[in-house]
Image 1: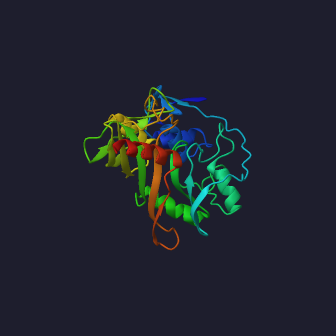
Image 2 (image 1 turned 90 degrees about the vertical axis):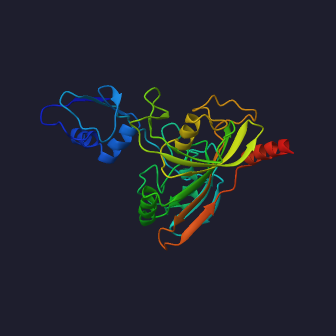
Length: 305
């Protein structure tokens, strides 16, 4: 952990620009990520990357020492939806972490992809995130694009940044939603109470989630089709919990109790629409629902008969 006090002549700089000046090992992009995750505090509080420091500000930078991770290919079964020389699109199973981290050194999607693609993966994501363009949570299943070269990675990243990739999810939530369609437009930021959680907050980044009812069950559950315009961390889970319809099984944003014995949220990334990063061809790819979610839906359907 490092501490800094803003001195005369250092004021009026954005915090994400100030940090790299004080520590050359931290890039501006890294500083932004650390600010968002609550690893950089100003006067003991979480702030925005756009905050301009003032004389006397006390800044704490929680620099975590990265543990060495021996990244290796692992022959882990995973469904490949599409593959060519530029991208590979897979259906990530629930319970699988996307990339290695200190708590999950192996058994990740990256380990599995490395076994399939060998040395053909973009290096832009860094040493432990080769080819990773976007992520979904460990206990969210579904479709993911992985870049096999740097040009594909840059193109796909730009499409995502410019909201040109249409992401569709399926979720089973507690409660019966009255509206057939709705849009949730609420800003999301790192929780000030629990740094592992996100929360709706006035100072957060704008987050937009569109929801549409597929079916209502027993006055207890609603099956939803969801499209997101933005890709904030835990966005769908936070938004649905905030409006009173938490996702079944979500232990982070609800009590997680459910009659189906499911651990982790009933949330599946169903489809992606995007332009192929090389050919520009419009593509729409889908990932089949996981068996556990199909079984729950079938059980609920039988109750309706």
